[in-house]
Length: 213
Image 1 (tube, rainbow, N blue to C red):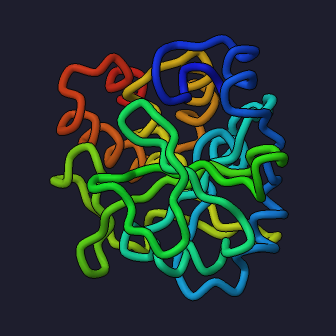
Image 2: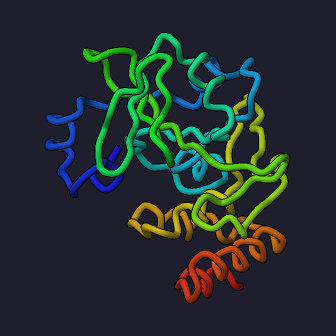
Image 3: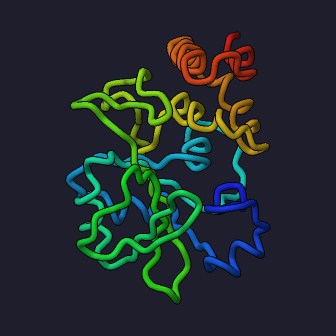
């Protein structure tokens, strides 16, 4: 977890840990151990998904897990032995057992208890029936069965083109590096989808030219 990803104002890594505690994220294999038998869809996202899709390896400060917003109850049951904190509107707030989440909530941080490190960042994503909706522009949608892929070890990841669409907003150095690593690996169908999605969500985005080849 970096300062740019944290709730509130920009913080250094040291300030972030002083305020919220350290991160010691699960690996994709540990995520699989926890969610392999879950009765809902899940996908590892972010930098781990980029690396699994062929991006150059790099250190990972956290691990992002995407789940459908409608599966929040099942997620809470699966993580009943951990604390979920709402990362919402620039603040962290514990989600107490049985309490409803804040309206519009999209993100949780997860840790076992107050003396334990954060292990996972959960991202809630909308859906309409069997269609996935891009949370920043719901005109962009895909069949749920086509937004991810399963690696040989059983870990489910977001597809590279979907993951890059999420990264397009911030354009941090690590996002730019992932883009340049992954674009040569995208087939024409994936490139076309990403170009069209960028045109809808981020008209004139500079990545469109890089994806266009």
